[in-house]
Length: 68
Image 1 (cartoon, helix red, strand yellow):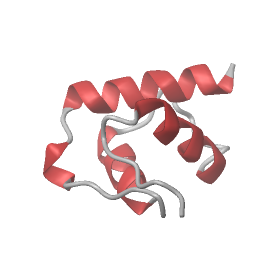
Image 2: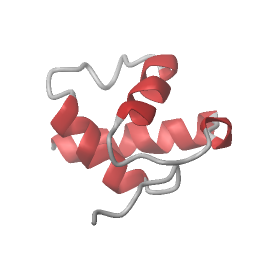
Image 3: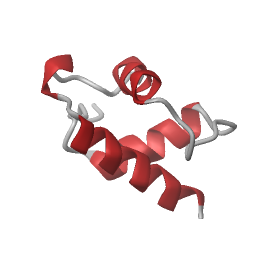
Protein backbone atom coordinates (compact mmCIF):
# COMPACT_ATOMS: atom_id res chain seq x y z
CA UNK A 1 0.00 0.00 0.00
CA UNK A 2 1.53 3.37 -0.98
CA UNK A 3 2.21 5.74 1.86
CA UNK A 4 0.03 8.78 2.29
CA UNK A 5 1.68 12.15 1.72
CA UNK A 6 1.48 15.11 4.07
CA UNK A 7 2.25 18.81 3.59
CA UNK A 8 5.79 18.21 4.83
CA UNK A 9 6.54 15.68 2.05
CA UNK A 10 7.58 18.54 -0.21
CA UNK A 11 9.78 16.59 -2.64
CA UNK A 12 7.31 13.73 -3.11
CA UNK A 13 4.46 16.19 -3.62
CA UNK A 14 6.50 18.02 -6.27
CA UNK A 15 7.11 14.78 -8.17
CA UNK A 16 3.43 13.86 -8.12
CA UNK A 17 2.37 17.38 -9.12
CA UNK A 18 4.75 17.25 -12.10
CA UNK A 19 3.19 13.95 -13.19
CA UNK A 20 -0.34 15.30 -12.73
CA UNK A 21 0.23 18.77 -14.25
CA UNK A 22 3.19 18.56 -16.68
CA UNK A 23 2.18 21.63 -18.71
CA UNK A 24 1.67 24.10 -15.86
CA UNK A 25 3.71 27.30 -15.65
CA UNK A 26 5.15 26.60 -12.21
CA UNK A 27 6.84 30.01 -11.91
CA UNK A 28 3.58 31.95 -12.25
CA UNK A 29 1.46 29.48 -10.34
CA UNK A 30 -1.18 30.82 -7.94
CA UNK A 31 -0.90 29.36 -4.46
CA UNK A 32 -4.67 28.86 -4.35
CA UNK A 33 -4.34 26.50 -7.33
CA UNK A 34 -1.32 24.74 -5.85
CA UNK A 35 -3.19 24.26 -2.56
CA UNK A 36 -6.14 22.66 -4.39
CA UNK A 37 -3.95 20.47 -6.62
CA UNK A 38 -1.99 19.06 -3.68
CA UNK A 39 -5.23 18.05 -1.96
CA UNK A 40 -6.48 16.45 -5.18
CA UNK A 41 -3.51 14.09 -5.40
CA UNK A 42 -4.67 10.51 -4.71
CA UNK A 43 -1.78 9.90 -2.30
CA UNK A 44 -2.34 13.09 -0.29
CA UNK A 45 -3.90 12.78 3.13
CA UNK A 46 -3.45 15.68 5.52
CA UNK A 47 -5.40 18.50 7.10
CA UNK A 48 -5.90 21.30 4.53
CA UNK A 49 -5.51 23.86 7.32
CA UNK A 50 -1.95 22.68 8.08
CA UNK A 51 -0.73 24.34 4.91
CA UNK A 52 0.80 27.80 4.88
CA UNK A 53 2.58 30.11 2.45
CA UNK A 54 6.02 28.84 3.48
CA UNK A 55 5.05 25.23 2.75
CA UNK A 56 3.49 26.17 -0.59
CA UNK A 57 6.65 28.11 -1.54
CA UNK A 58 8.75 25.04 -0.69
CA UNK A 59 6.53 22.80 -2.83
CA UNK A 60 6.73 25.28 -5.71
CA UNK A 61 10.54 25.44 -5.44
CA UNK A 62 10.83 21.65 -5.35
CA UNK A 63 8.53 21.40 -8.37
CA UNK A 64 10.76 23.83 -10.28
CA UNK A 65 13.79 21.69 -9.40
CA UNK A 66 11.91 18.62 -10.60
CA UNK A 67 11.54 20.28 -14.03
CA UNK A 68 15.31 20.84 -14.44
